[in-house]
Image (cartoon, rainbow, N blue to C red; front, top):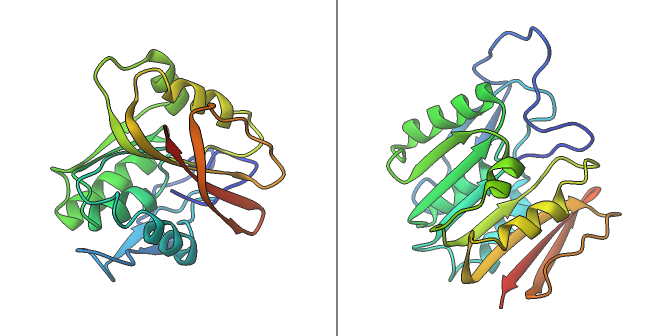
Length: 204
């Protein structure tokens, strides 16, 4: 998961040449703790800050081991990779930019986590709208591009067969946005970082 605001996190410059990375993502806990992974050079593509990730996974300490996780609008995959490091059974990363998705797949191979982590290149909203008959994710990370009206539709579509009965959902959106989530999602905790607020919900 990455930090990006007015433009899609995974959008690349027209004609931009692929890059091995302009920055680094640091895994902060678990099996891959302190591992540094390259971040592709793409506008707005930056890992979720360490402080936010550490806070979130402290909240999810009991829920992450064995989790079936879904990282939507994955970007660098910072949250999904952190979940794998902390014992998640599997993570499906969804990222529409093929270059960014390829870099994420490379990082999974670097960690030796390709068997538990799978990258799907495609549009997250379209994937959710298509529905799922058998998915039952216990943990979802949702950080859509800001100011594109994607947060509420994604929340609605997640209720169409994507979630386990008592799933955890982490939603990050611009602080000024009043997101209406499904009525059976209970707010557990929230954290603010800059112009964004992350909210962790528990499905009831």
